[in-house]
Image (tube, rainbow, N blue to C red; front, top):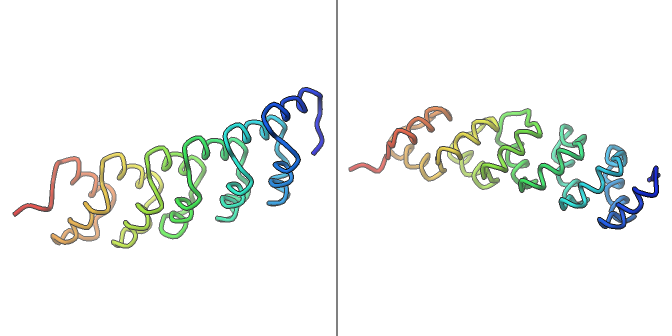
Length: 171
């Protein structure tokens, strides 16, 4: 890595950007050896570690070219590689960085995606998963609807039932 000024070196020192951090990113692939000094400082400040970048990059081609801003946003909002991997298994592609951030912000987890998929709800978009979480549709709610014969519902139908107050546990 080639620094352009003494100020960059001072910023690296202040924020803990050391040679191990830079080498850790560069070892992931040439696409991660291109970050500007400010990007490296921002990533370090926000806890973006080389192992995290490696896990995200391994998910697929779309994630092999993430920007520093994408990675920082993921870290700030708590996006976990496991959540993105679950989406890759069960969601509707393509998943973009904004979708990852939105899912993280609204609490979409790998377990939620996997549980919904186990009930047959596969192929949701990131926006649909966010909508389900925002409106309180849980896998337990979807399961109880199925037990009462309401199967093969789409995301909008699940949300409409939930926000209308419909509870399938009636007697």
